[in-house]
Each structure stands twice: as C-alpha cells, then as structure tokens.
Length: 263
Image 1 (spheres, helix red, strand yellow):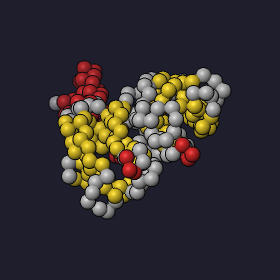
Image 2 (cartoon, one colour; image 1 turned 30 degrees about the horizontal axis):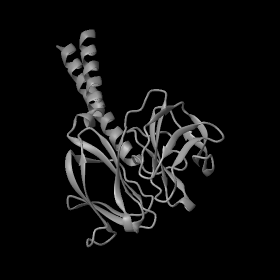
Image 3 (cartoon, one colour; image 1 turned 135 degrees about the vertical axis):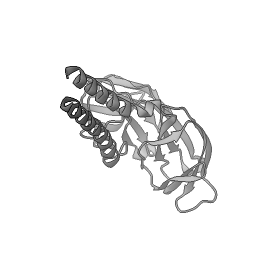
C-alpha cells in the first residue's frame, strides 16, 4: 500500500512538473508586443497576415503569446486600416525562448526593437534589466538616488543585462552620466522570485517608465508604474488548468487504490 501511494504521488508530481515545463519543451517561442512610439497612433499588428493585436495605443503591452519557432513577417498598421504598413519587418524566434518586440522611435522612423527576455526567476531574488526606448533621450544610468549606478551607459534601443537584487523597495533614479537626475523612481518595489524589465519610454521632456513582468508567475503586487505582463485572467486560467489536471490525476490514483484494496 505504501509503495502504491508513493508511486501515485510521484506520478502526480511528475504530471505537475510536466505541465509547468510544457513551454520549455514546445516548439514555440513566447512573444509580447509593446507600443513604444510616442507620436504613433493606435495600431493593429499582423503576423504572417493574421491579426494578433488590435487598437493598441502608446504604452500598451500585450500578454506573452505563443509563436512557432522560425521566421515570421510582422506588419504594423494604423488601427482600422490595412494599407501602407508603418512597419514591415521579419522576425526570427527560437523555440523555448521569450521575446519583447517593441514598436519604437518616432512615427517617421518607427521600427521593431527586439529583446530576448528571461523567464527564469532566482529563488529569493528579484531580477531586473533596463531598456532604453526613448528616442531623443541621452545615454543614461539607473541607480540609487545619490548612490552608485546599478546600470550604466544605456543608450536608445539598448537593453542591459539582467541584474539580481535583494527584494526591497528602492529609491531609484534615471540620470545622465554627469549625475543629473532626469526621472525620480522613488518607491520602486521589487518582489522576490520575480523578473522585471523597466523600459524608459516617451520623449526626453516627458520621460516615464513602463515596468513589465518577464517571469511566468504573477507577483502579488505589480510595481505601481507597471502595466502588462501576464494578465490575472490568463494566469488564473493557467493555474486552474494545472490544479484541475493534478486533482484529476489524484482522483484517479485514489480510485485505483480503492479498487486494489477491495480486491
């Protein structure tokens, strides 16, 4: 009996691990789209001729969406139209990887800027990177107010490496290389076991940040300046699916056990 229960429990745990690791073993990449062009109108986004985003306005960010590995044609149109694409570029993605695809720069020069994301959180740490998507802002550093820089020399279209920080609330600032503050980010809360991307967006005179969550698991509280990442509904549906599958597998194990003991 103990052996049976041990085998059943092992099977249930294995099923749960397989469910949560399905993305890593699939032939898909995960892609999210960000509208980061300050003077561009709301847009529709097509991939390989099919609409995937409709009516996205400046600062909008989608959830992560699965996209088969390989090369794809991405077209961006003013919302409600399908003539004269403002962007038409090819995008190549690899299976098991995650990407942020941002429509960046001013409208007359708008382009896709692509970054590979990390979805792997580190136990007990917050993992953070900076993306510079403000077309006319200078090269900047990000660090503690009056303290050392955590990220240095980020220029337009650059993405820093991820850095691991202790979970905490930080008084950060974006500043130029000479120490002049261009944006106060006091009270930035970073939670343990989470991965974040902090994007500097808009024009230099209206600089702001867009904070997105790169990890698959939702935090209990998103940073106050953030939007996007996986939605509550999609995260709940994903978790509910795993729970239901594990519960179903457990019920099957219990039925088999009762049948076996009755014999």
